[in-house]
Image 1 (tube, rainbow, N blue to C red):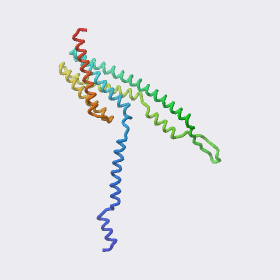
Image 2: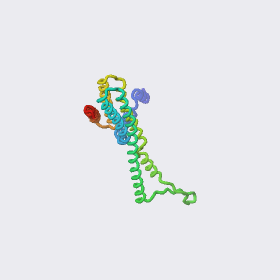
Image 3: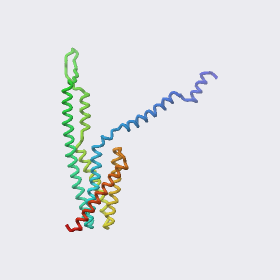
Image 4: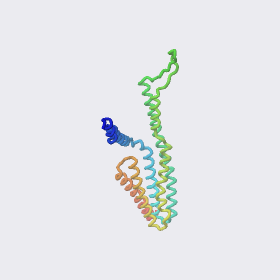
Length: 251
């Protein structure tokens, strides 16, 4: 057999090793780059809306459940518990939205004022960069602003806090959290079973909220869940106990 024929047969049996090696080297590099991008993600960027959402959900859950447990400590009527929970939901959602809006707007004013001071200091320290565009005769025609500076200013504005977004997230999260004890107590007529259902539903929701907040922020899950759970139990127990004590004294 001729040498050229033998070479073609070998190429058919054994694919190009150089291309195979390049593919093998290129594939793990892509995987490594993608995993590195995930590791380099700045989870602190989520802190604004994550804080408002988690705080609103926990506040709605704990405050509404504590109100219902407190009223349930002195009144066994289901209507009284439901009305108390509804009033707590509406009042708490409005309070959280207004409070978050005022707080974040104050933060926005501070950051905008600081941004203006920084820009003024940069202008004083450095001479402005001007791009001159000339015509064919070499005469100056117009001055254009520096596009790099505009990009930096646009990026800074995008990173500013949004009061409306924070207020909406807080109010919505509060309402979602407050619905848990309301739904748990709405369909149970027996007094002790109703209190137990509220406590069980709130416990489960506290565990879910604690895990969700830790997972979104890449924080320790167990520690966050236990902290949220113990805090909710303490709030309900103190409210129930004090209301029971005050109701038993006839005040």
